[in-house]
Length: 219
Image (cartoon, rainbow, N blue to C red; front, side, top):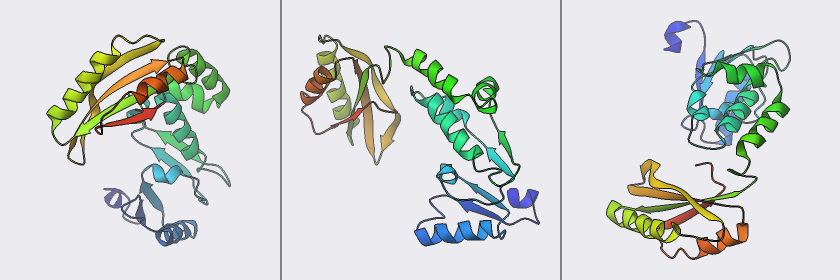
């Protein structure tokens, strides 16, 4: 589509399908910096600390999919990624950044005004007594090719953890956001506690090869 819109420009992709080796990476960056490529289109890989010269315009698409994730870190991740990409534009001169979003007020407040410290303060207020760094979270995922077996293990531990003491709270359970990976069905539960030691002791009581545990998860 971009080739049709810009028939006189050289357009290249920048993603894991295209860049599989360090040699590929070095080559495409050199071609871009030597003005042999006019437009790079790619994934979050574009933001990861690479050295770009003479970037006049950066366009961020789909950032709302990150901002609206079911994660307590969604706002932090969306803003951090936007700042990284914006930093690639105009490093050695003037540059512009265009962001596709339905949450303009969020980006107007924290990105255009460049008040990241205020974002951190607001985020700490939002997370207090609910999310890290004030409490610890543990996501337990049960996965198996037989979804009935995975669900059975989930229900078993939900029943165990529902009546926990020691300031440990079961705050949710059900199908994982990505329900099937590598032909395995996935269910999960989420625990929260201000007592790290007590939470770890409870996690040690999980005795099934179907379970995997992620502390302070992005989920």
